[in-house]
Image 1 (tube, one colour):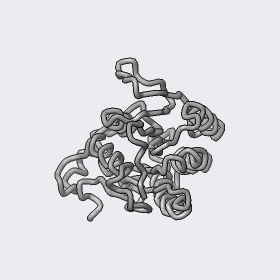
Image 2 (spheres, helix red, strand yellow):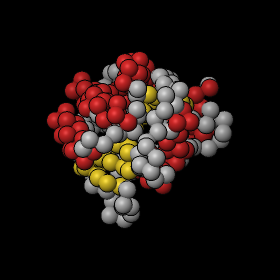
Image 3 (cartoon, helix red, strand yellow):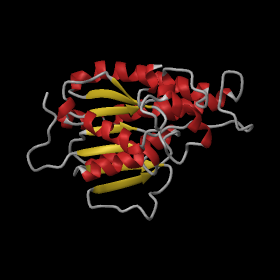
Length: 251
C-alpha cells in the first residue's frame, strides 16, 4: 500500500491533547517534517509556542464530553474540506486523582469517575476514528493510539481506572486495525513508559532502576516513534503496539 500524498502536496495530521507533553512534542515533530497540523486540547496553545504556517488550526475542546468530541470532528473536517487526512494521533488522556489524592482504583473513587476516564481515554479515540474515517480513507492514512505500559502491567502510580482504560485502548487498536484495513487505513499504538513531562512527580525517580536504558524517556522519544509509524517506512505495519519504555516492559 502506498500512503504517499501526491508529489508536491503536504500531508495532514490531526493530533489530540497537543498543548503540552507528548502531544505537543508530536505536533512539533510533524511540523518540522513539513506536515500540515491540526491540533486540539482543553486549553488554548501557550502564547510562547511558535505557530508556523503549516500549523493550520488549533481547536480548544474537551474530548471527554461526547458533544465536544463531535464538535471537534465537525470543525476539523471543515478545515480539511475535501482534502485527505494522512494521520490521526489519539494522544489526549487523563489519569485523575480522588479527593484524597489517590489514583482511581478498584476500591476507591466513584464509578462515575471511572466512566469519565474511559470517555476520554477510550471512547474519544473511537469517536474520532469514526469521525475522520472518510478523510483517512482519502489519504490512505494511519491512526496511532497512545496507550501505556500501565495497560499491560500493574503500575505503582497509574491507578486501576487509567490502566484498564489503556488496556481497553490496546484491544481497540487491534480491532480497529482489522476493520479499517478495508479502507486502506493502518492502525497502530505506541505504549510509553516513564516519560519525563510536567506531570511526572519525584516519586517516579524510584522507577529508573527498573529501566534497562537507565533513564526516563522524553516526549521527543515518543514523538519520533509516532511520526515514523505514520510514514511509508511502516506502510505494511498495522495492528501493532510499540513499547517506548527503555526496556522497562521486559520485566
